Length: 186
Image (cartoon, rainbow, N blue to C red; front, top):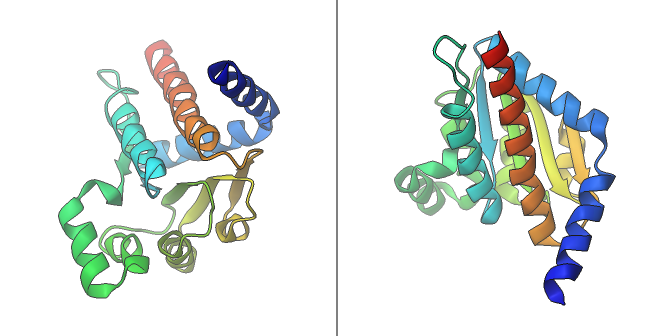
């Protein structure tokens, strides 16, 4: 059955993720939160939806009464400015132009992508690196351009867009729940 085949593919991919990279991503996010820096989440299509999902889970879900808040932002969440930039300045500027309003040295730019080569993601990583931000990505196994532009590149060992996008959401749930548990026990 197709669902069994997909489930096997997803489980196999999850098992193949490098745990040290997951830990490093967790550490980068925690460092960003504890230092009061911004976390920018980027993605197109389904990966944009994952970025928005992370904003919800980390912007609300990790917090306890007195926990230090994570300054988290996804530039895809404002359709008006996103479409204005795409229309007036070119689609490749949709993230970098918004980051010019907020990005500070030491911030973290985390990109979700299946291909890892979309022009707006490449331009955003270029801008972030030139302006002192750290960069990370979670991408499919397609040799994406942003892999070599990232301080941490998690290459999901799959070319299947659904599996890669599932991993984006699963990582968000795992990391946010760990931060929440740490906040509760603090």
